[in-house]
Image 1 (cartoon, rainbow, N blue to C red):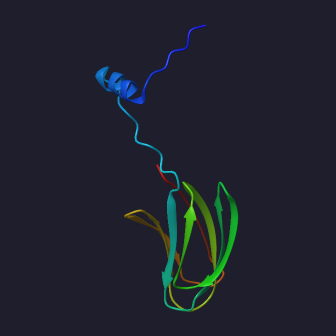
Image 2: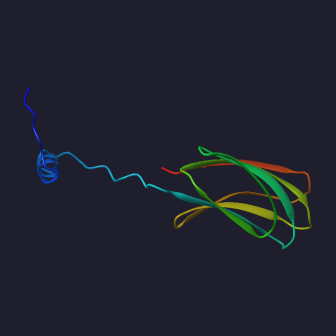
Length: 115
């Protein structure tokens, strides 16, 4: 049996010469941030699901939580407080608004997947 060794430089040259496109590398440790804003002191609780498992959260506004994940699925409940509580996900420079809660006892579900 014959063993063939190809250097990385040769492989890249051959792939580029043949017109093959390279795929950008997947980020090794992607970071997603959930931001919960609103009038100070509103209480909430929630569950955030990632591939790494579930994380139970309890807190007051404003708060933010970081996750090393490519996707998140979240469920939050407003417990108490006057005003509007808003939920955003920051993915690098991008920030997406996922809704708000105004009345205690109301719920919000959302999910985000990084492509």
